Length: 312
Length: 225
Figure 1 (cartoon, each protein chain N blue to C red):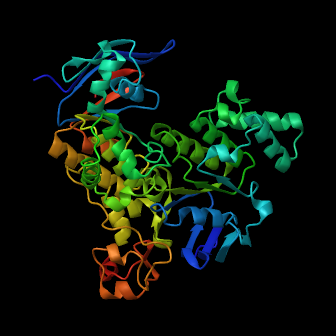
Figure 2 (spheres, each protein chain N blue to C red):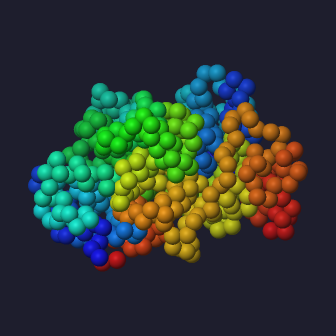
Figure 3 (cartoon, each protein chain N blue to C red):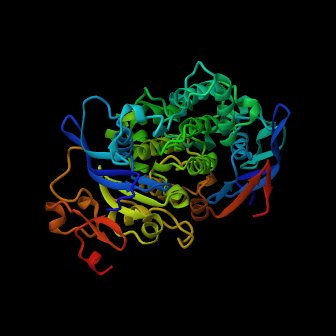
């Protein structure tokens, strides 16, 4: 366990009315790195993002620890030391203020600049995310989805947080603008010296933008380690099956692609064994009866019983 | 044999902005033509013109040998069922308040092909074709997964017995496994029904895998690819 972690998550679990949405998640975020949280719909990605910010809804039972440089995240840290970029930019911006005005308020509340200096800093930050000078005084509804998400990125990074959590930041955007906006997000985090937790189901984006990744399945971690290693050679059967669904340069044209048989289990319907066992092509009796603990294999953590992992 | 779709020197303008600037291409029956290019290059405007949702400024769009740009709205009504769209957002392209089976039935009713005796059976057939059952038909869109919703959207497109599908980013919003499932379904439908596809997508690997030919657009024009 490296002691130089910026964010340290240990055995994080979140229950809603006794139904587990997330169970036993541990990972570290190092200073300056981009960590991707990957999984299908319902895998627990957004719950994790909320839990990192200490923003789980009332009624959620959170256990385990989330430490930012050794101390728990408090309300006072949000917007200062840790910032959120949500999927829906419109909900993150005030509809009644121009974007430069609301960014200036955020700057003033943290950096204590004069009104004029705060506005100048806000406009500078908007220029840095690629919003043209003529548009900085626009209201959020007057901007395109990509421009709005850029404004939210400026908002999240302008106060130089230590950590930015981006929850599916580009899912609501036109596919062509996604990569550009992700590029801006990565650049601004790097410029602010912030680490980034990128929540996404887009494995292409993970390959292009992330250093390490956590693969979640049914609220449980399946594999955790460096992106290049995992994408090149996935070890958890779930990661392997997920990557196999994507066509590559070597896939014969118009051939049928592998799909995952069945569906992910409903929350609360998990058996005693591995969550993926019912859909796993390698599953043995043990997989159905005993939940696998994470173990270190080939520079990463894999939660799987399979013997062949011993020989990697 | 003439191609299913024959687009010649297509120009689409919005006011003084030229979105599509002299684009020509063909799609044969049973063929998939991929269309790629950066945001704002005119891909979706090209699709809108082929669907006759946007009247082009100039150029020809021949579908099954018929010149569409010369037709009035009344005559177009006979052609529209034969060219159907499938869009990116599976939830956005369905009404949130109507059951799946009613939405799949809608084209049949609109085209006067609905009867109490044969209609429900036809809807079940269409749902089965895309891998959904009667139980799914009784649900509302938010009660289905994204992949199932996209299947329902495809079933509705198929209700018109189309010959050409305009697929505008049909898998971009889906998880990898659902995405593979939808691409497989579209490949199968093409093989069994000889459908032509115009496939707009940003995922280069998916376009190369799924298309017979790939066209690249930039600033309203096709570039050599």
